[in-house]
Structures are given as structure tokens and as C-alpha cells.
Image (cartoon, rainbow, N blue to C red; front, side, top):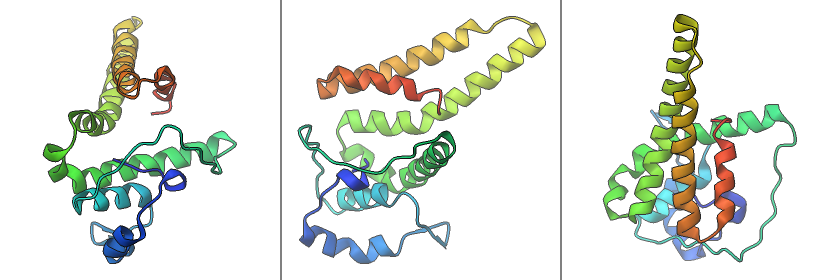
Length: 168
């Protein structure tokens, strides 16, 4: 659902068809300038184009080198995910079942993570007991999602995405 900016390539003729929509990106009536790679991917899919993952591709990009900028980047990406999911909802029935699962996971996962964390904190404060079930539930949800990705891509490295859960 998101072809990463520095890793994506587009056919010029396809991009030319969508350029006006891409440049006039609004959210709730206001111009929006975050999540442009996800927005462009969804525009391409809505227009009937397809995306393709090329595992042998190599790309370089600049990444945050300290925690503050990294967390700001993750917040921008999360806002983009939630916002653009509304644009992509009508695409879900046409997509591969894995992509549908991924879109649902990207949106419900952080919500369930937050609710689980709040419930665990409440249990700790009110009941004084360690909420082991929360850690187990979060770990299980994370491993299922990462295992599906690893199986789908036939690449065990996708299990490493489970380390991203604490950032969420």
C-alpha cells in the first residue's frame, strides 16, 4: 500500500495522468504535505495500475540518526497511514488478501497496542499485579503479523519488524 519514496519508480506516463491529483493533496479541506509516497501509491492503485516488489533492488536514503528525529518520522508515517487508509478503503475488496490484512493491521495494531498498554497500566496501578498477559498478547500479535510477512516474502528478515512494536 506504500511504495517508499526513495525506493519507488514510476512509469512517466502513469505519473503524468495522476500529477494534478498528487499535487493537490488535501486532508479535511487543508493542504497536506506528509505521506506523499503512500498517497501516490494509492492514487496509482485507484487508477488501475499495479505495484510490484523487487527484492533484488538496492536503494539508498537518508535516515534519522538520533531518537528525536526518528520518533517524529514515525509519527508522520503513522498520520499518513491513518489518513490514507480512508482513501484506500474502497480498494480493499480488489486487493490481495495479504494487503487487506496488512492495512487492517497497520490501523488496528497501534490502537490495540495502546488499549492493551493502558489496560495493563490500570491493572498494575489498581491491582498491584504484573500484567504478563498484556506482554504476551502484544508479542503474539506482533509475531503473527511479522510471520505472515516473512512467509509471504519468503524472507526470515521480516521477523525483525517485531522490534518495531515498542516504537508504536
